[in-house]
Length: 221
Image (cartoon, rainbow, N blue to C red; front, side):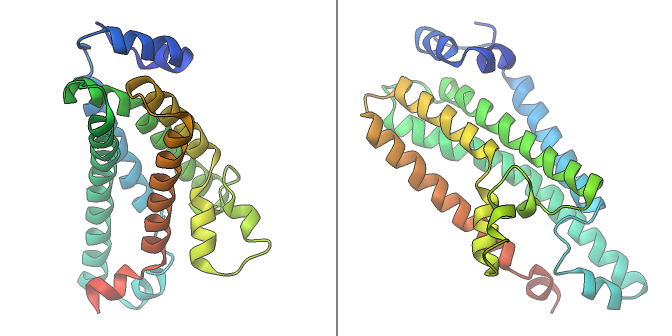
């Protein structure tokens, strides 16, 4: 059956019913390739405008000549690699979970279900770039997240980063994950919610932890 991302977003319940009744989808490879390209471009653009260099900026200023340019080049390569890794994780981790608890569906068919949350999260990454270009707003201060509210009451960096991970986009993803797990498994609704919240909390905690690390010192000092 022909796959349409937009149609799935418009009518998720209908799409999931169709997914259960269909053996395979065609024209999905172009979506995976397209999302990899979009992710690489977004992470590359974020490096070019200086996102993620808050803890590097002082060291960049003290570096001179070839060393300075090499460090900037390595940072760009790291962001491009992160763009590839980001999409790979968001495809494989949910797909493996779905395969583990689904009703015997083939892995290739299950991969299709990861495209919708992936599209939402890439849209969030695009909003980060847009906010940085527009107002110089860091991702954890996005008006779409709890991070901007948390900064009014909290100074602890890890907690601010963690709250910055909780956004309207993530809630949209959780909604999709809930619909998906309910459609492909026989789990009770409360078990589905427990699994989704646990995995997302772990993912947000890991993201916040990485955000606190000074990779410049880890890589160059």
